[in-house]
Length: 437
Image: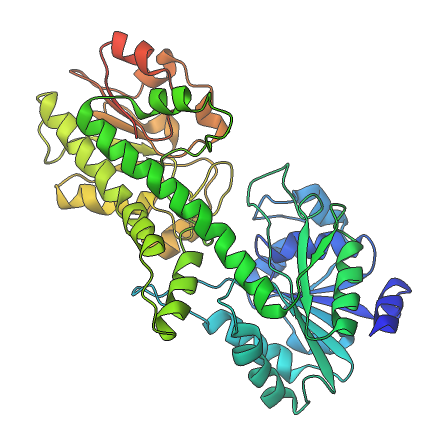
């Protein structure tokens, strides 16, 4: 094993990345600065973009992509040229909130068909404890005809990349690593130490590493759910939640979380992996699922408050002109997968409102494919009754009253500022019917 690390560093062996999305691509690029890297993805369009020096994820930028030495390919047989494999494919949930393991099973089949003796396979996808050993290993063995522990070794190192975040990156976040035995753990740790400046934490087993990842996001989910519940309560009391949190936040040990829409492919998904496994073992989660229910309903809650504000402003609800700014699951990131803004759209349509949507950062092709949503240019939005600021993109953070005013038609102006980007008092003084979580 140890000499595999040395052969990688000496350029005698290559590392492969299976899955080149928001997680896999930055990892491939980081490793390519030190060792030989083969980057594999099934998506031919994505591979063509990378090869032409375009970064559709905006994670590393076009300049970095155009200069990287990563060998981008959709030819799975190229994986045979690598000995250290990292699998970074998404792990979504089905409509019934059960884990959808098809991407990780598919990646295991592809890798298994091309696995060679003496390889190390490390999974990065977020899963419930046991998936790497109980689901992925049998597929790798079946497809390759090789024996795990004899012909190849496995490890697990959960991804902690924060899409759209230029501060917390692969290099600056401590990396959890694990391996099936001490020798593998040592090899996996040393390989990751090549690129992770913050260092690694050696977990005592693969299952511990899997569990650590799944609870990181569950903890955030529960904390945000608490804030969302407070927001609902304070809204009924006529108190501004943001003002309450600013006051409470002056205490040294008060945790700084804020209400909001919880989407994306981590926080809104990972808790379901944990509760699914718990159910299999006969335990029905109470706190985790309660938090999930609150967070999953927030889009509907925002739409209902939009309707209430329209009625209070003597505006007709059916056919009301509503514009939504921002559609991605989080700010400054083009990813629209599992965005909760779509829940606002669906709920408004139930009331006979067909909102127009603008998002200068979002991947428009992805939004069209996933949701059938077509964006409009922000400069074309005029004569609206209601504006919903749904995502805190940097383009929206500099809005002045004169910028906001341009969007509206005659009559009372309804403004829903979900992320609290604007000064509430300023807009209320200007006569807006202002609402935020």
